[in-house]
Each structure stands twice: as C-alpha cells, then as structure tokens.
Length: 198
Image (cartoon, rainbow, N blue to C red; front, side):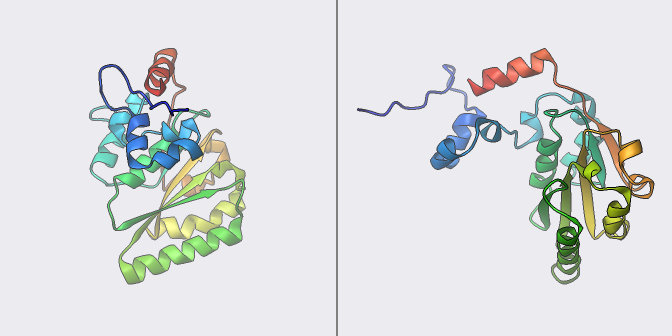
C-alpha cells in the first residue's frame, strides 16, 4: 500500500508543519502537534501584539538581543514558554538556554545549574538564560536561592507563571525583573492557529 504524501496549503506557501517536515521528517511521527506548531520567531507568534508588536518593549528587546530578566505572567496557552524559546533563539551563539520546571525539579538541581552558569560566564564568556516554568511553585525562601545570580548577571532569568507575581514572586527578585502580562488568545488568534495547523 503506497504511503500518502503530506500535503501543504494549496497556495504552496510553507507552513510551520511543512518546515518541520523538511528539517526532520522523523519529528513528524515523534513530536506532538503542539510542539511542531510552536513558533520559532516573532514573525510566527500569534497574539500578544501589545508586548511584541512594532515598537513594543519586549519585541524590541528580542529583536536587539538585549534581554532583561523577566517574569511572563499569563493564562495557560498564552505563549509564555514559546516567547522564552524565541528569546533563546535570537540571543546568539554565546548564550545557553536552560529550561527548568519548578514542578519537576528542586533547589539542589537549581543550584547545580547556577554554578554551571557561573563557570560558563567566567571561563567561556557564555551567558545563560534560565527559564523557570511555573516559578510560583517555588516558595519565596526557595526563590532566594537564585536571587544573587540574577543580581550579579550570572543568569538572565525568565520566569513563567499563571499566578499574579506580586503575590507569587519574592519582592526582591521581582524588583530585578520586568513583568510582562500575556493575554488569553482570542477566537481570531485560535482560528489562525487552526488554519495554520491544517
């Protein structure tokens, strides 16, 4: 039985799906659709125009690879992880992106990552972007563990949270980060994503 070929849009324009297939055909079978559809640049990002639109602070910071420590606050599915990965993609070869889940990992693992970041900066001139998903799962005392590294510039912190950071994030840490509030995707945004997937 002959295998059917994946078909793209009738216009012949490349989509995220066909681009992923071109780069790694095996990925189509092994990765969930949501992962294959994840935008890899600001041009592919749907929604959040108030943050990444033309002339907006976060969009300018990403475009110029001048990334401050930040907290991305918004509902599930609004693009927090995606924006963090776009930041990493545009940060250059001298930057290492380290994702960390506050649900799955603890402070001992985090300390190891922070010490590695310190060595990378001192001996290789390598900058580390530390992405902490669900940062609100760390209590405020645990958040103190990475405060000195943020203060010294050893890591650029990107924290993602669904909780109001005014209550969920250590005040000292919060004062050293920009807070970006992401909005829920509207119906038009969701329809655009569905059309892109199809």
